[in-house]
Image (tube, rainbow, N blue to C red; front, side, top):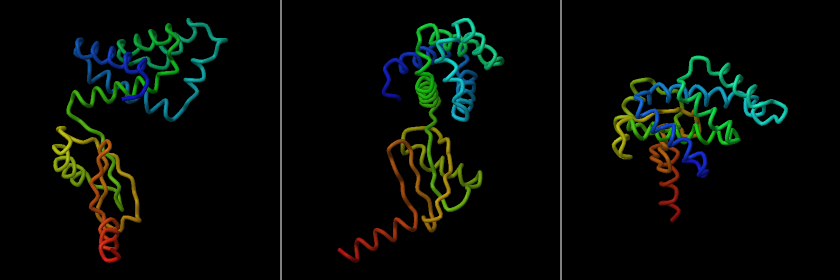
Length: 178
């Protein structure tokens, strides 16, 4: 979760409302799409911070940018806009994403490997490690790191599982050197 209490409150409110209305998966999908769009382009945040634009124009922008989004998400953004909290949008979306993942038993994991993983390898890693962090599955993002030589390094939250050859060689070197 973010360190912003404000973002945490907005995210929790959106999460509870989505759960109560039975649209958690749909809102979560829209949140991920909005996160990706905001990561690719920060013009939206700049527009929302312009004092020259009226609240009405900013509301129109939100409606135009998210035409097919769940109304619950759009309404949450309107509430944030009215409260002058749009500077917290990234934190709110990230906190909501974490809440939704936790509720569905999914953890995000980063796999460092020497090559892209196949779908079968991702599935095997997910089933082997998800239970170690108390989750049902892992949502895996792969980062290519040729310096690992072989094997993988897996990071789930603040836990790291390292079975790379470079790590094993480093351990061997420390053992031999003393």
